[in-house]
Image 1: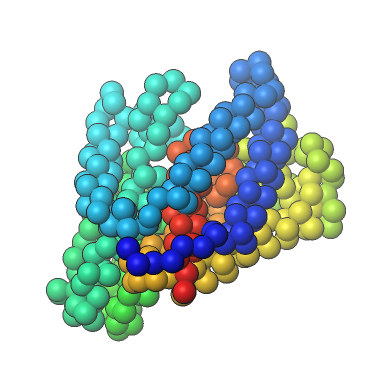
Image 2: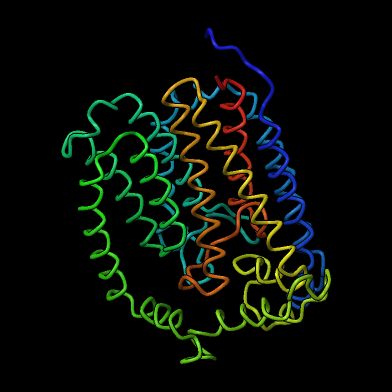
Amino acid sequence: MGKSRSAPDIWIIIPTLLLLTIGIIMVYSASSVLAFREFGDSLYYLKRQLIFAVLGIIAMFFTMNVDYLLWKKIARITLIVCFIMLIIVLIPGIGVVRGGARSWLGIGAFGIQPSEFMKMGMILYLAKMLSEQQSKITQFSKGLLPPLGIMGLAFGLIMLQPDLGTGAVLVGASLLIIFISGARLLHLAYLGMIGVAGFVGLIIAAPYRLKRITAFLDPWQDPLGAGYQSIQSLYAIGPGGLVGLGLGMSRQKYSYLPEPQTDFIFSIIAEELGFIGGTLVLLLFTILVWRGMRAALTAPDTFASLIAVGIIGMIAVQVIINIGVVIGMFPVTGITLPFISAGGSSLTLMLTSVGILLNISRYSR
């Protein structure tokens, strides 16, 4: 290949493993009461998290040692498989409904979420497409519309589940890749206005989304309905203070805060570990994003650079949305905190993507 390979960036590995460790501890702390009530086993969610963490670490070290150019060869077929899974999951009787969304394929407690795979599949395909056709990206019809059309189709299928949170992450990461590859700001601004109009249309089409918007603006208008999650999240964060109530001492996990081990795990972190614990988590994510962007800037070619941008964009957008929801800045969307929230597909795929990022860092200039 002609590329010299060095050791992977240790400053990507360290924050990733620290976030994963914090996640395992906090998943147990946040879920023990719920797990005992639902399954008679306070370790239920901890055991699942450990299984997927081990699988994810194995996948991370595998992808860290696989030349990133392999993903260029299989990017198209990967995207096609992801689209097929997104279609299959919508079929009644095959797709499993959880949390009001038909977004799972699987049996019983174990399953996969095709939308999670689509996020990575889209990043790989857009990186391949735009690295090969970078000279056309400034042209609206030939350069910009094709990747936007593919992204829009994936977003549309995800919204049929519906899963606005995952769709927003996919769009955010995709637009970042398209922007970095050289798209014109004027074109993106026009599309942004169309996007806002489409978002308004999505809200009108599903009244529950409008309730979530109004609940976000003033959750106390409906404290036992649409505003319940936001209020309980703030009730968790407030008492945490500077140093928190202590590990395992959360009050909100006693059936007050919904989804304490997944969407609202940062609320429990803030409650038990306080401002210091929450700041530490944000600092680790900041280090990870910084080193990821450094890998993108020093990548050996455009394809590698765009993959790195996409992976870091995916992580950053997901963190911003999750924590924004938890602290009351955004409407409730239902999205996990990377590496920390309890999860199967999400955790494994995030660690796999970090492995790809680490492989790119090995060839940095």
